[in-house]
Length: 499
Image (tube, rainbow, N blue to C red; front, top):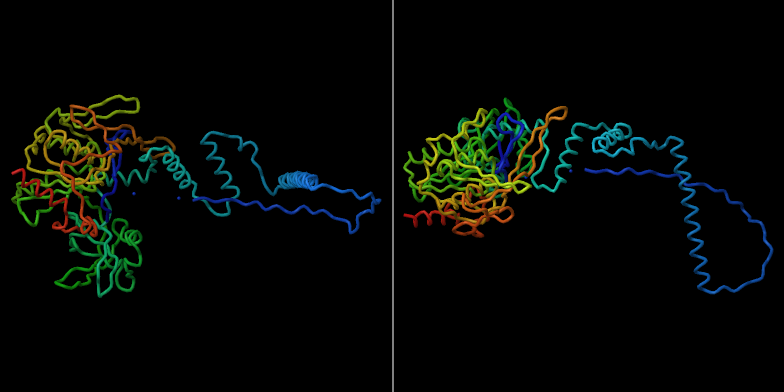
């Protein structure tokens, strides 16, 4: 089970540094100290004083005397409270840590806070979790929107996903609603079933809507659970069962179907295809992210569409949050010539670097889907195609769009892109504290080998600007009918004008 448009990150090769052109989704407490009141015995009668002559006092003088009296009272109270507070320290009710409290380094401060938790917290704290959350907060406070700290466990999970592997049953789902038995209910719409997945083998089909999680007496409506909880219950470890009930359209009605599917390793699909309903010569390639499988999948899918009779293509980059530089390099190698500049970057010091299309073979097995073979460079340069983009097109996806425009290879249709012209680098941490940190290290620019044009925070304008209509926006993007997809229709029109 996976959610669409998940940002993907990981370590490249077997080195300690990974460069990404990436995307594009916590607790406090206070302690209260109660102080006892200071008791002062007052005699029932005060000593009698000799009568004095009555004097008249002006109002200003009276006010001045009152203020002085209040100030004197406050000073006396402060003095008494301070003595009480000190006496409580002496009595052991509060235990100051005079030596530790003067320590100032980050490591010493964390250690000091840990001592307080160990010594005074009523419950049991997970110190490892506390440290991980502290490091995440530390990186988040850097001002870098994309900076983060990964625990070793998170790093390993990302490694599997970035290599195109995941645990689950192998479907992509979106939040949706349907009317069933006269009631409008929230459901999980299955808009894609992955190749060779447990879900495909069990008979799950695109368009199935998960109505219940669980089966029999244990089933609970997705409508009651909500999206996040329903998704959590569908996820699980390899070898365990995912049980749920789907609604499947049967003529004008729905039928309920129960499924119990054993979870397994699944190869994700970053490239999905379809043939245009209104014109079987047009193939659609939807690229959802740039992971290590994307270039190889893309070539396979193009050849499959060609074999099915497609001669023209729409490459849909909408809602693609980005991914790896190695992945977009592999994909662009099909369209550019050898030694064409596909990326220009500047670091913090303003140093310029240019990356060019060249043959490359990666040693890491997970990355071999990004290999650039000399024979494959430029094989789709003359392909008849257009590119779709929108505000969800970011990072590596924007780099692809920028190159298509810079080299005049095709028209770009849709909305202005997101504007994430930055590269993140992931550095692994060795030693006692394992994990990794990710930081923005470069900004990149369009212009091919001609000029530098930065678009970080600006975005890239398509050649044909068109937004989705209000009617289209009522639908979830992933189940939007093609006849209502204004941007897709504009892409078809652009293709027809090219011929």
